[in-house]
Amino acid sequence: MRHPNQAILALHAGGDLGPIRSWWMAKHLARCAECRDEVTEYNEMRELLPELAELPEISWNRMAAEIKANVRLGLEAGECVRPVEMPLHRASLKGWRAAVALASVIVMVGGCLVLERPAPQVVHAAETAVESTREGIEWQAGDGHILGLMNGGAQKAVYTLDAQGSMGARYIDPVTGSITVNTVSYAQ
Amino acid sequence: MSDVIEPGLDLQERQNRFVSQHFRRIFVQIYHLVQNVADAQDLTQEAFIKALQHQEQLKDEQKAAHWLSRIATNTAIDFLRRSGRATFCELDAAPESHSESPEAILLRSEHREYLEDGLRLLSARERAALILRDVEGLPAEEVAARLNCSKATVRSHIANGRTKFRRYMERRKR
Image (tube, rainbow over all chains, first blue to last red; front, top):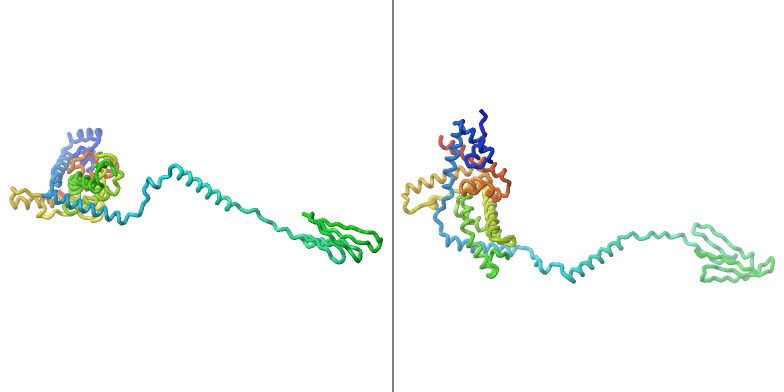
C-alpha cells in the first residue's frame, strides 16, 4: 500500500487539501490505521495551538495612549528626515505652463541638434597670388607654380587692378613700339 | 489624505482615530506571531507609522484594514527574522484569571512556554502561516494574501510548520 507523505497528512488534518486529494485521503484512511493515527496526532497538535491566541491582561486604554503618542513621535521624526518634495498639484504641467515647458524642450533639443551637427569642413585652398613685378605680371598658383607675363623690358608700365579680380599692364613695347595691354584674370 | 481617515477632521485627529479604530486588532494579530506584549506593542506602533506614512494608499475602509493587516504581518515576520528567536511571555505577564490558583497559573505558564518552544523551531514564514491558519483560523487563501505569496507556497509553509511542530511534541513526550 502506498502511504501519503507527512506534508499531505498534515494538510489533510487541517482540511487544506483540494477536493480530489481529500477524497483520495479519505479512501486511504478508511483502510490504513497507521495513517489514521498520524492524522489523529496532527489533529491533537492543532487543538493545542489556539492556546497561543490567549492574551495576557492588558490595559487597553494605557496601551492606546502610548501607541498614539509613539506613532505621533514616529511620524514627526519621519517628517524631519523626509526629503523635500514638490507638491504634486504645483508640479503638474497644465495649460500654458505645459506649453512653455514644451517650447523650452523643443528649443533646447533644436539647439543641441544645431550645435552637434558637424560643421562643413573648410578646405583652405592654397592661396593664389597675382602681383606686378619689374618684369611684368606674375601669377603664382597655390601649388607654387609661377606664370609670368613679361613686359619685354618696357621702361614704363602702368599696372591696373580692378574689382573683378584682374590685373592689367599697359606699356610701350620696346621692340615694336606699339602700346601693349596685358590683362591677367585671377578670379576663382 | 484618505477618505478612510475622515477628511473633515484635523490631520492629527484623523490619524489618532485611525489608530484607535484598528490598534487592538493589529496588536492581537502581532501578539499571536511574536508572543510577547512589549514586542507586540513596539511592532504595532511600527506598523501604524509605516501605514500612515503611505496613507495615500488607503482607498476604502475594507482595503485599509486588509492593507494594515499585511503591513502588521510583514513587520512581525521581519522582526522574527531579525531577532532569530521566539520571545517568551514572562510568568507575571502570563494569561491569568483572578479565580485561578497560583498552581494553575504556573501550569498554564509552563504549557505556554512549551508551545512557544515549538514555535521557535519554525522559520518566520512557517510560523506566521501556522499561526494565521491554526490559531487565527484564517482560510489558506487569506493567509496567502497576508503573506503575499501563492496558495501553494502557503500550503507548503503550513505543512512544514505542522510537521515540525508535531515532531517537536513527540520529542518532548519521550
